[in-house]
Length: 117
Image (cartoon, rainbow, N blue to C red; front, side):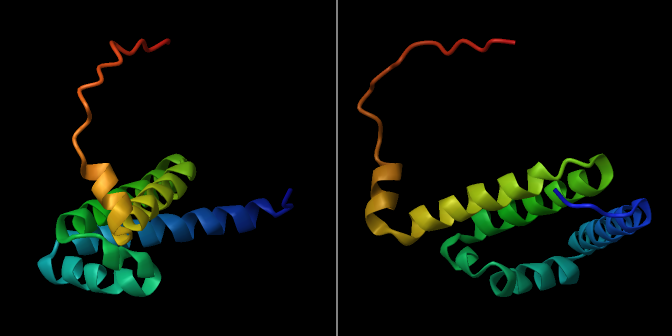
């Protein structure tokens, strides 16, 4: 449990919103997008195990998650994006895991999936 003042919480929200909007604006320009892509390995060293397409997808998902956290208060989205892409990088880094992940399924059809509402 963390105690904080409303003023401090508002400033934290404002900072997150500003950073999120800045990153999204940078992504709209080739030079800004390139700069973000070049900076990611310094912030997240594991991205070196992502291919170019995965790197772009991670960047977009991360920025969208930051925007959701800033604009909607959906802070869990950032954590989910980081955890899932780190897991992808971990699989890519291990040739055996990657081989297993890419192998075709044996045709096992487990049937339809029911979604309960």
